[in-house]
Amino acid sequence: MRSRTLTLLAATVGAGLVLSACGANSADSGSGNSSQSAPAPGGAATGGKVGVILPETATSARWESFDKPFLTKALKDAGFDADVQNAQGDVQKFTTLADGMIAQNVKVLIIAAINGEVGSAVAKKAQAAGIPTIDYDRLNLGGSSDYYVSFDNEKVGQLQGQGVADALKDKKGAEVVMIEGAPTDNNATLFANGQKSVLQPKFAGGDLKLVREQAIDNWDNQKGGQTFEQILTDNKGKVDGVVAANDGLAGAVITVLKKNGLNGKVPVTGQDATADGLMAILRGDQYMTVFKPIKEEAETAAKLAVLLAKGDKAGADALATAKAKDPKGNREVKSVLLEPKLTTKDGVKEVVTQGYVKASEICGGDLAAACATLGIS
Image 1 (cartoon, rainbow, N blue to C red):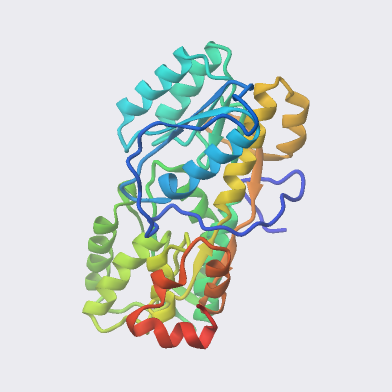
Image 2: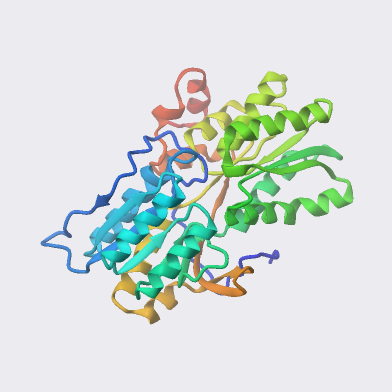
């Protein structure tokens, strides 16, 4: 098995396929206000309240459009109230929301932190109050959360690396640019590690050539496009493939490629299976995306929270059979790590069939013929 930063100690969580995101979806991002579930069927919720703090909506609509309703429903169905709030990218607001939930003595706190520093600080406060914490989607390095639920994020990067390698397999010495996510996001580091586990041997052997690798602060799409344009200019307009860490950055790269008459000629990777990303794939401007099961991620986190709220640590340990390495904290965190999927043009229909992007969102205008050919309706 390929080397991983995240070492799986036990095998599988079922492979439900649902749309993910580090990038934006086309769905309405919502207001980010508190969302408390209605009582469980048949009467009032009896389990108490679980707090959930999501990070933002500016770069990704996933949190409000997918994670929030999935978490709310799963907790409600288990007989718990869900207090799901969004910090809207504001570290102080994230802290204030956490303080409020801790003061309410929530049974468990699920945190998808803006950055590792605030996530670790919140986990420490919660645990001092006797409240178990779960790092959700992003592991807070140097933190103290009891559990972690996410995807195998290094595998995500491996799929991206494999995607561009496959697309360039007949072009020896092809020149590759790597546009990475935020350096403060541990997931972005894992994506990059996975990409390089596939691509570094090809760079070393001369099959491919690395032009430049650049991380983009805050996953800022505009900055990503500007950075890529400067790299392209510095390389005298030459590029054969681009590893973009998510669909948002891929879109920014494609905009620059269009300006230079290179779109459709240069394979670009992505992640999240967003509507915009899928349309770019249908047009031939983007080679692939990574489809990640957010519904399964949310339901697993809710299941873990319910076990912890009931004091069933043995049950929680039986669910979280993987380990995530936290090098900053010099520890391994009990984890559930879900499987992502490489998706090219032939896989777009599956994303639509799963119900997380509507055919009407991606099949209009110039894409009607492509959708008809692929049987997407």
